[in-house]
Image 1 (cartoon, rainbow, N blue to C red):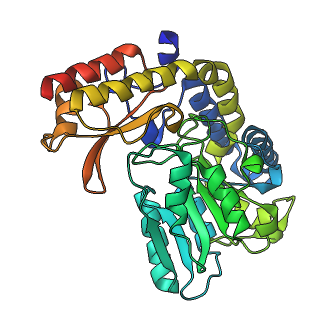
Image 2 (image 1 turned 90 degrees about the horizontal axis):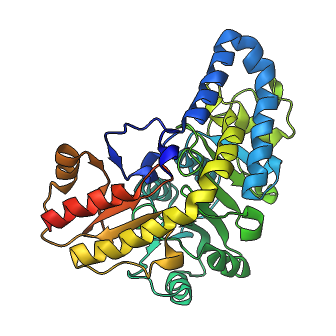
Length: 378
């Protein structure tokens, strides 16, 4: 594990326990990223009119095999927020229809759904999922209490951002299919974190970040669009499409792939990111999860607050834990300014939480340092 730290560009004087926010790019992937950028700048016209298409196809092929779907079902976006925006704004729902999600969803996307819902007079419902979660059966039952005859879309995270819980989305999707409800999965934290096979999952849409747990450069994400929906999902930004240089293979892809001049180098590093994952990250994930389970237990011991899940299969390489009511309001600043520990502290549903991530560049001493400092405060 120690040798892997030197494969990343992170400041070694910082105890970095916040991989979940923006990821961290290893040196080989970052160098590949810069190589593509240099190729772009050496001959911009040739690169953007000719070379880019085959390179993008190679990335789609590599990623589609990794996430379990077809190459022509993948679109690249710079982030999941942009990806989901294109789905939301393509929906043709009627006044009074409902979109159902949990109260654990990512705040920026909740805001996006709400703004769209207000404009189109569609009701966006956040079903409360109480914590601690206890069983998949209870979770699914709680969630589906929010389903009505007006529910047309379910939007749900597979791994939540604030609570870092792995949701039983396959069970949700299966029940949604029985009711004819469209399913959109926010899988921002999924690729490179837990196993994923989109076709087996069975959702209609899935977005994932490459720059998080798969460790790609910032600005690399994707959207899966099931083939049966490609006739009505339209881009927010229209450019040349079929009248441009993109050879296809479909008008759907042509409409999305070229959206004006932009640097698409981050997308072209995906094969390199997957190779790095398979060689260095995947073999060490069991160790990372073992450390996170230790963090799960030690948080309970130090804070004296209840965990929000049973641990085990509910968490991967990231865990959130509620802080005591008397927590210093400047805890994040104390951890950073005095101890150079980078870790998020945030409010969710009226309580404050600390969320720790553990990636292959972390060492056991990183967790020990955090717990030692927390122990001196609480």
